[in-house]
Length: 132
Image (cartoon, rainbow, N blue to C red; front, top):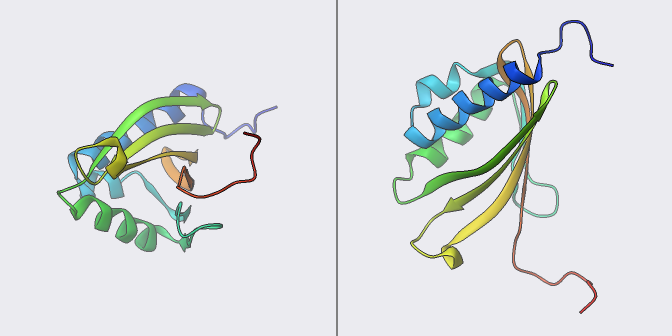
């Protein structure tokens, strides 16, 4: 059951679309307008737990630094939204080949038309004890 003030799936999808579009355009002002004052963002790195950034200013500063690197690009592969939550599968490129990129997922929550929580996860080289 969804809380009465929770956003609809459509509202969440639109907020995330606008956020991703602003990020890809490197429009810090438009992106910041979509960030909740009480935002919690946990970066995908360093492994295993990332770094937590609390509050709009800390989150926007982190994202603005990523956007300032004009040698990198952010590509959205897929977005899935349900209620207040959205999952974004993306690729962050820092060179021309897939070997110079990282594939990741952000799990985001929207409140009041703004991103209030974003948790980042990536595929990184390394050895997991997986069956061969």
